[in-house]
Image (cartoon, rainbow, N blue to C red; front, side):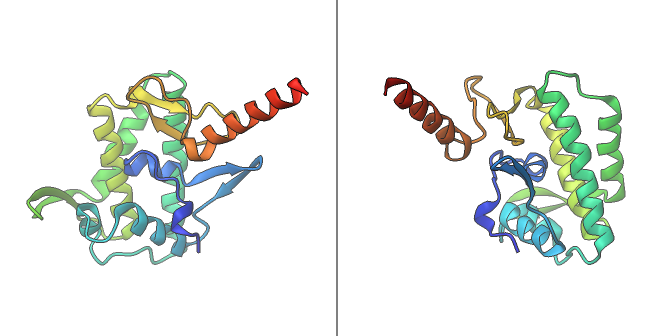
Amino acid sequence: MTDHHKFPLLAGSLSLDLVNTELVRRGRRYELLLTEADLLHWVDTMLGEGTLYKASLGSRSIQTEQEFQQVLEFRAIVREHFESIAAGEEIAEDFIALLERSIEKAPFQYKLLSGHLVPVPAGETAADVLIALAAYDALSLMAQSKLGTLKHCSNPDCVLLFMDDSGKRKWCSMKICGNRSKAARFKSQKSSNA
């Protein structure tokens, strides 16, 4: 199972952090969700015990390979559209329609949890519930005009996406790519001075 410290939770957004469960290390693309157990571990890491969205999943868990593949297929579609948006393209109407259909499979009820009104998907499977939550998150980002700040990491080898509210951010994370860039520049300067 993947170590939870390996999940790059950069966005605080369920849909974007789901997309960021694929990354590149040393020039190779890595899948962080290799098994159903990895997906459940990511859910626990992302949603956290006791959080409102975790409460909305309830006791459901990914039970089958088919459910697992359903989540990965949804992630691939969201990645494709988020990458297009980060590249400056308009949000596609078919993407909005897909997100809306995803919520229809697990329509929301609302419950008061810890003093907050929380959407609780009423889907039959954990995959439908998780996808509905991620679709709701993506649509919320659109409604709040936050996807206009979506960017690719400036590291050409990195596949991570992030939202840049300041307009100045270049890296997915200083810990991940920013420090690598600084180290490479320092090494280059050192060798050119020698």
